[in-house]
Image 1 (cartoon, rainbow, N blue to C red):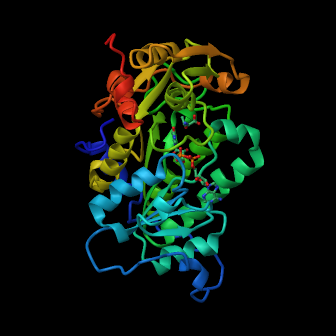
Image 2 (image 1 turned 90 degrees about the vertical axis):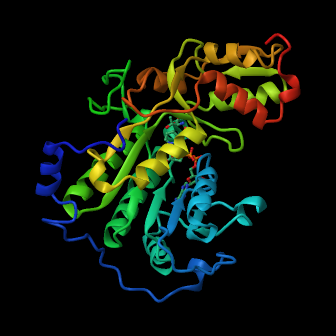
Image 3 (image 1 turned 180 degrees about the vertical axis):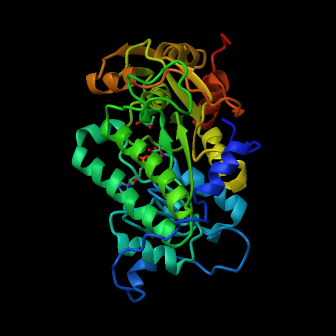
Length: 367
Ligand SMILES: NC(=O)c1ccc[n+]([C@@H]2O[C@H](COP(=O)([O-])OP(=O)(O)OC[C@H]3O[C@@H](n4cnc5c(N)ncnc54)[C@H](O)[C@@H]3O)[C@@H](O)[C@H]2O)c1
Ligand SMILES: C[C@@H](O)[C@H](N)C(=O)O
């Protein structure tokens, strides 16, 4: 994935001729009255005293899911604790609440979201709220609302307030008619889940707003992300996180995908590093708005083999979930990101997960 690369002449011409801040750029401002500042918008915003600086002022939506807390930690290290606001509709755990600014933000409440952006002088927005693939199929109306209507709110607010906007897409934005091994950045995208459809919609709307209104929209298609300190939110790739917890706790793991189901995966540190890189890239270095990002690709049986090097007594059974299996069978097996360099392959991933989960003592003598 050439996040930062020389912009070709053709791309430069395209950018110059089609917007990016010039040309037709009347920003879509919704016709709702200007509301007075409401206490509710920043009532839960503790210990905040923003200083003027060159750092971006960041809002993360859906920040209490698998990826948001880790992203906030990374961004706070770089831009300062009080310049990064985590938000969600759920109640944060104590350690999250006291680690930096947190605010309630429902992305379906346009006015509230706009107030938060205005009152806190947000300049960068990471839009993480979503219903993932499996929970999305279980509640299509809610997935449609959060993933599509919510995105529309975010796009309009970002365009109106000239934010740099990051929206993650996914391997789930591809479908059975896409080339699956490998899947390139540009190819046919006909996903069969509401999650995938909403992500293709996000990719296209972001790109449209970029060319039409000059919105600084940036998007990476993530593979399945694996993390030790946060739980996945109901996706098809969740098994690859669950196995570590079950190996540690019970020594038994029931996999809900077939043993030979190959999917692209990535350790969370690589994912968050790539996200920061694409957000920090100079605009003129981006030749597209959406890129694949990839690290490794494995099947459940390959992951089990690697995990058993650390927990040899792990017992594994397979009980296939038909919904998740059908989704996985329609997704890429290998993701082509061309030249982005990841740090973690499968062995490093597994070692890191176990050392994070505190299993050093269980590492097999057999190694
Ligand atoms: N985790 C992965 O493997 C993976 C892979 C590809 C893409 N992504 C994308 O990255 C983003 C973050 O993923 P994640 O794994 O952290 O997701 P997650 O499901 O763990 O968390 C999503 C968060 O969105 C919040 N949310 C739901 N409805 C909301 C609303 N109305 N307003 C505000 N917040 C709301 C939830 O409370 C939850 O905390 C998502 O957009 C997802 O599609 C994740
Ligand atoms: C792949 C990704 O988008 C998510 N983990 C899911 O399985 O739904």
